[in-house]
Structures are given as C-alpha cells and as structure tokens.
Image 1: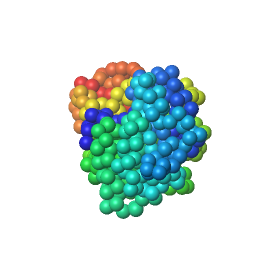
Image 2: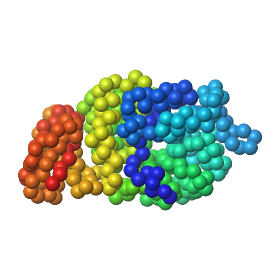
Image 3: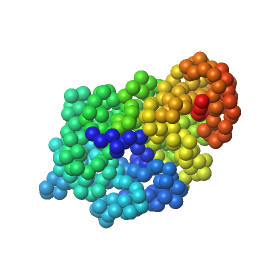
Image 4: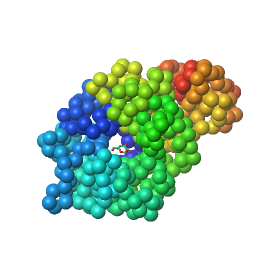
Length: 378
Ligand code: GLA
C-alpha cells in the first residue's frame, strides 16, 4: 500500500450526485474545464471521477469497454485530456457481478479489469458493493483481490472502497489496499434523512454515523462519509430537498473536521457564487488536508449544540461549534473542555478574521443549523 497516494484525503469531483446515469465524455470534459475556470483545481480538487453507467460491455477477451455513444473517443483520450490539464481520471466499478445500476461488475474479472483501467490511464477506482455476497469474509476477499490486482499493474491507482460500512471496512480496508472506505449508505441533498435507506442527510451522516471511527483514519487511509452535496440546491440526480446556505456551510465544515475526502458532487458548470465560496474556503481545506491526518471528534454536547475538535500538525487546535437546533443558540467553549489552559489566539475560518486573544473560554452565537470553525494557536 502506498501512503503517498492518499497522504491527505483525496479531493475532486464525481459525476453521480449531479449527473447520475447521463454521464458521457462531453460532460466529463466540461466539468474538467469548469474545475479549471472556477479555480477549484488549484485548491487541490484534481480527481475527476466517472461514476456508474459509463459501460458498453465486455469484449470477447472479457475486457470492459465504454459505451460507444457516450464515450466515442475512448477512455485513453479522456485520460489524456485530463492529464494535459493537471487533472486525474477516476472510474467506477463494483466488487460484485453487476454495478448498482446493473452494468457489468468486476467479480471474477479483477486482474483483467485492473489492467484495462491502468492501460487507459486511470488514477482512481471507486469500487462499489452491489450484487456481491454480503458477508464480511466475501467482502474482504473481493476487495483484497482488487487491491492486489491494482498493485500488480504497477500504476499508482487510488482505491476508493465503497462498501457502505456493511462489514466494518475501517478494520480491514487499509490492509486490502484501500485508501478510502465508505462508512455509510448514500448521501442525499438534505439536512435530514429521507424515507429510503440510501437517503442519508448531512446531519445523521456527519454528526452521528462517523462517531467512534476517528482512530481508523490517518495518512494513507480515510473514513469516507460520502461525497459532498454543496451546490446541488435540490436539483441533483440523487434527490433531496436541498439545503440552506448555513446547512451547506455546516456540511463542508463537518467533512473538513472529519478529514473526509472532499469529492464535490454539484454541477460545476452552473455553480452559484455562494456554493463556490464554500467549496473554495482555503482555510477549511487546509484543516481537511492537515498533514497530521487526525479525524475530528465531538467533545461535548450542550442541548442541540456541539463542540468538536481536530488537533493539527503545528499544535494548533481546530474547534468546530455546531448548532443542530431550529433556534439560535449561544455556545460557551470553556478551555477545560478542550484540555487547554492560558491564552490562545483565535481565528475564525469562515470570517477569515483574527478574533484576538482569549483566556479561559470563548463564546459563539449561531443561527439554526449554522456553525463556526475556529483555529486556536498559542
Ligand atoms: C451506489 C453508491 C453510489 C453510486 C451508485 C451508482 O449507490 O453508493 O455512490 O456510486 O451506487 O449506481
């Protein structure tokens, strides 16, 4: 396993949340262009991942080929287009017999598929878990097999295990060659959960479903609470009512505190200014990408408000203060809860402002579903 590939959580864009099954090479190129023109690629968002439904089938030798109408120029041409612009190509497959959308899966074809992907110039593989035997032994075996096949190609390919947390992948995914592993079912574009099992809202994914997993994340391997929905505004292919600006701020802040992969899911060609500003917050991105690689965690709860911390490589402390309530709340952050003493400089990473020196505590007022992310320095 190479830690270099994922020394910090991977960043990029994936087609699923915005485009769903209508993905094609034209869309992928337009998203790559938008990644450059918005300035997002310079901030570290470099993987462009084609999710499900790119497939044409398997040829007589068993090798996968892309759908000829959707990808008429072929995958190597797309890889070249991206590589020429400093971007990287990601692709999607599945550990079972079929992908979740019913396309050909990788089971029994691991070596040949890994060789095909490497030959195309693929840099990232998202590997799903539909139509696979749903027990831990099989899950481990299938992911290990693909991990080994990828390694065998000699091409550095980031391995994004998408097993939804069914069989505690945080315990074995890293040794199977995984660089990230999904810990949950699918996100949707909403604060609360929807009625279906694959409609996980930001609140349950971020605040509840990652708890206790912080020990398993670190350089080379990251818990993945699914892709970002910032900017979908209720128009995504994955459904959901959409979120307020405050909720998208909180979503992005939580994912950065969690040292989660930052894989955008919105349509970059029509991204609104407020969402672009959220996704471009370099101070938040720096938290996510901090080289110590600690996943943040909740240290206390005051009613529906929470205080989270993420220790940083330079001994600073990131503090996230979150309001899950429907009403405004005032939160007091006492140093004793943070395990610190004395005077600390506080910086507000959303206001991009130094707040001054604090001793003993500081206090924050937050609107409903809003948050504040502070960096404390000695
Ligand atoms: C699963 C995954 C999603 C997406 C779809 C594609 O639901 O969890 O992220 O890749 O499959 O069909």
